[in-house]
Image 1 (cartoon, rainbow, N blue to C red):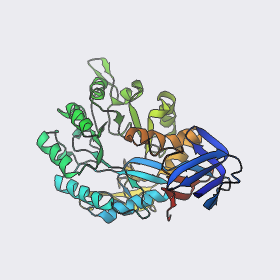
Image 2 (cartoon, helix red, strand yellow):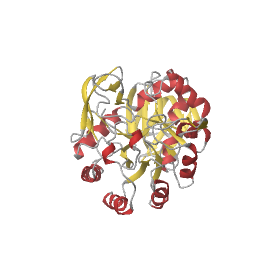
Image 3 (cartoon, rainbow, N blue to C red):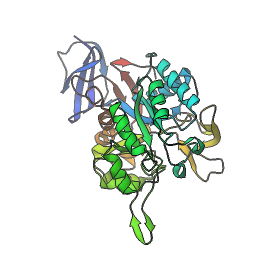
Image 4 (cartoon, rainbow, N blue to C red):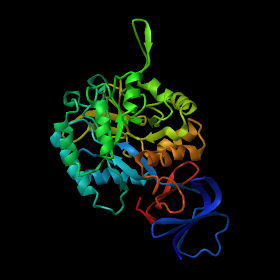
Length: 394
């Protein structure tokens, strides 16, 4: 007998959508997938999808917070609060992301993450820490603290690796900073994914970085160079590298604001779809009402205003962070960028799972994979969320 049976809905299965399909779960694992009336299949609990859609749980590999909390606030409660807000919007696997800061604040975040890992009730999977900095370009600092940016010296990064207790899954750096390209080899040896971010590099530097393990561009278009002219010659930048190299993943903040509809359409027209990953890159105001907020941690922040679906600087002359949740990203890609639903969902399930090297256990609806599942309507409004086959309180 199965533990739970989902039926009477569209199943976004690994091999393609199944209309009027069913999924049976046993011991937190997807045990059977099929089409039609599942009569004769016994289960402790049956869930009538009522024509709704059953999707793999979303995977957000780049987020700084939600629900009024930032992952860098310095408490395990802040990490849990932000993670649970994202869970309510369908994110069943998450990578809490740091910002460039002093070492004390970074180590506190790592300690809090370690504590938060032990809390499982109504929690998404914590896949690992994504470090954004401190080896970034001050010229592309954005909302990062440029005065804390530095070169990757062994005495510094080895201390961070030691303090992390093996919890770092990804590290974003700028490859034009001396030592960063070679740093990719160190990260690879530790099983950490090297990423490119906040960078003034040219395309040729990106190519060299790729030879040392760098495989993804963090928040494509944001904080990165584009083509420039030097003595009349056109020099392609990081954005152009993202388009040229098919093997290079691009991470996109698909809130419809950081990247307008036309840019989203350009990206999906030019990039292989299996190398596009949707991310929220959200700050603490994600999932919260419009109004005043702060960008950054409790210790280091500045005031912002949230309105029109994005955080802005008080003078409203520039953005100050995303307030997106994962379900919003899928809606934008379907209803604005024009992607088929299953392709948009792949960009926040199957693709990030492959990048994180966890696709053997999650990221798609397939027999033998973890039953991290989301039920949503045709309008992509979340109805139910399951982690390892257990429905969570949303």
